[in-house]
Length: 163
Image 1 (cartoon, rainbow, N blue to C red):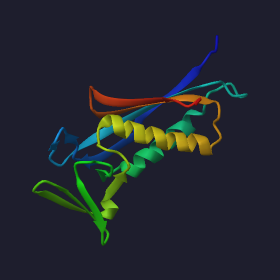
Image 2 (cartoon, rainbow, N blue to C red; image 1 turned 90 degrees about the vertical axis):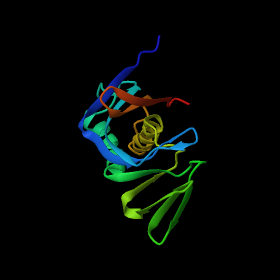
Image 3 (tube, rainbow, N blue to C red; image 1 turned 30 degrees about the vertical axis):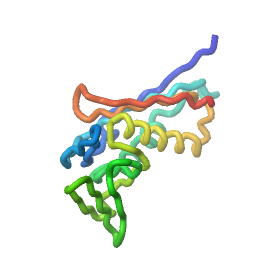
Image 4 (cartoon, rainbow, N blue to C red; image 1 turned 45 degrees about the vertical axis):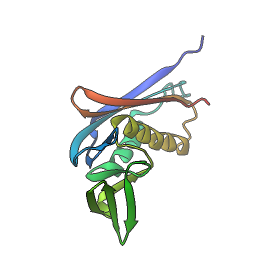
């Protein structure tokens, strides 16, 4: 039997406030925002120091991902429904007869199809995995991220890293 341990971080500094407009079927939500909260759990083998990862390191990795999204408009670059263009330091997003223009500095352009909590959790998870890899945390075998849009309403993503 293989034993695994896990470490979970969440809390005040693992949050971001952002605006978005998700697509639902062939509809486009009105521009609105959320105060998102993020929870991250990693599984892994104990290191020689007898821990999976230092809490402060995992919190830093998650916080850095949150900071990339904080106080930004979350743009789903891979949306098949939106007409998206960047020029002259601005992003223009069109859907039917609606059009929006945002300064590039206010946009987090994400390689996702929709700005759902589930896909935001996957993006954050990918950012954390990059940090774990760069930090040589080879003992980490799985990650799970939950993004809460509002109390009692969250979407998640989990991934086995042993592959």
